[in-house]
Image (tube, rainbow, N blue to C red; front, side, top):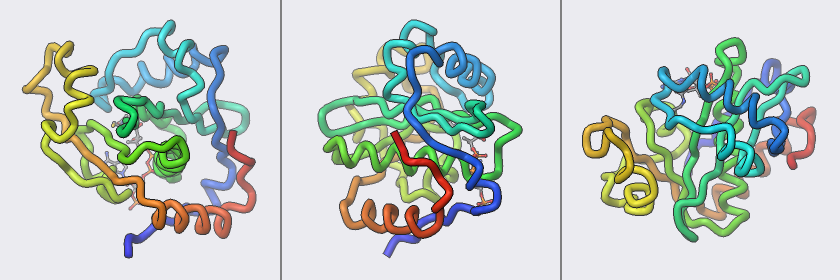
Length: 187
Ligand SMILES: CC(C)(COP(=O)(O)OP(=O)(O)OC[C@H]1O[C@@H](n2cnc3c(N)ncnc32)[C@H](O)[C@@H]1OP(=O)(O)O)[C@@H](O)C(=O)NCCC(=O)NCCS
C-alpha cells in the first residue's frame, strides 16, 4: 500500500485551496516569476495565465495567494503539474503537497490516466508517489513544449509520472476528510 502524506494540521489548516480566476492572473504571474529561476519553471505570460486561470489551483492564506500550480492537459490521457510555486514565507507547511494532491484529484475526476511533472526536484515528487521515467515515455510533453525549448535534450529536468489509480484517490479523499476538517470546500 502507498503511504499518503499527512498534512500537519497546525500550519496547513489555515490554508484553503480553490480554483483561480482570470482576475488573479497578475498574482499568479508574480508568484511564478518570483520562483521561476529557483524552480526552473517555464516562463508564463500574463495573457496565457488569464486564459488558463481556471486550470490553476491556488493556496490562499489570510486572503493572500501563497501557492499555485496548473493542471495542464498534454493529451486526453495525460495531464501535467505545471508552474508549481509556493511563496517563501509559506514554505514547509505542506502547501505544495496539498496543491499537488488537489491537482491529482482533479486530474482523476477529469478522466486522465496519468499525471506527470518535469522537475529539477525529483525527491519532492517521489514522496508523493511519482516515479522517474524516460522523457520518451512522455511524448505528449516533448511535442507540446520540449521541441520549442532552447534547452531541448539538455535541460536536466526529470520526467515524473504517477498513475491516477482509483484506489489511491479514494484513500487520499478519506484521509483529507479525516485530517482537514477546517479546510474550505474546494472549487
Ligand atoms: C518546491 C516547493 C513547491 C515546495 O513547497 P512547500 O510547500 O514548501 O513544500 P512542502 O511543505 O509541501 O514540502 C513537503 C516535504 O517536501 C520537502 N521538500 C521541499 N522542497 C523540496 C525539494 N526541492 N526537493 C525535495 N524535497 C523537498 C520538504 O522538506 C518537506 O519534507 P518533510 O515533510 O520531510 O519536512 C517550493 O519550495 C517552491 O515553490 N520552490 C520554487 C519553485 C519550484 O521549485 N517548483 C517546483 C518545480 S517542479
